[in-house]
Length: 312
Image 1 (cartoon, rainbow, N blue to C red):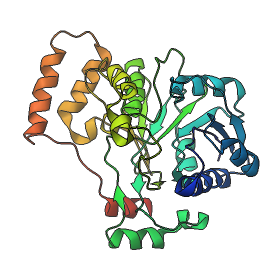
Image 2 (cartoon, rainbow, N blue to C red):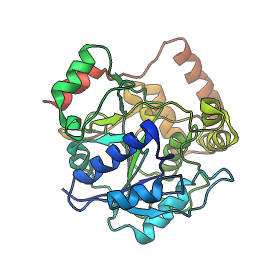
Image 3 (spheres, rainbow, N blue to C red):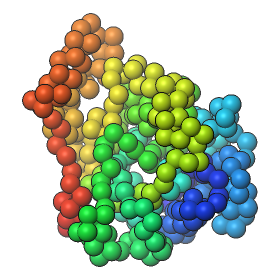
């Protein structure tokens, strides 16, 4: 099991956010004795937290006028200074299990992007580090209707090899469609996108959007989100986890085409192989209408079946 370098840009270290972020960093470090964590940006409390936790702090990084870092700037810094070739950019409220490291070790592509659906924890749920690997606790939350699998439209972690993001356009982290823009860029570059939902357990600690001026509307509808969305449109539509080209299961990697939506899978391949294809807009319109009318739909993963699969 190889060590990883974790990259993140935390929020201000106060209140619930401080507890969640410290728990997350301690969790990442606990997965392997040689794991490395690099935190970017100058959010209040970050320097002190890095000193306390024994991780690296990079306060100055290319960012928007509001101080939100660019993904490419973080990736470029990690190319030069990270200890490990396999790196993970993730939101600073994400908790991981050992099976994520196991999953990474099963991917042999020279370049890849590994992503997956997260499991949303309920608001106010008290957490201890040892609970992350506790299946009994998670099953109790599930049975009480407090645990949910986040839709495939959003991704909170991105595993990749050093140097993969050369030539990436400006993408602002933590704003709407930044995850979709990263997926779109990889698909256009022919880089395998691996859906690890059925192989890696990833937990998300609840948070609101009070740390952002303008709140949730600014996150998903502000100018930075619009810029991220514009990059998605180069692909033809907004890709999600459902557009991953591979799926990782316990028995290995298998090719994935729209998670069972055959037309979406065909559309993905046409847009990747023939980005300037005449008539692709017609194909997108037809597919959108068929989806809207529920004539075609992708297969979904349910939280209960996910745990059953992971525990096999």
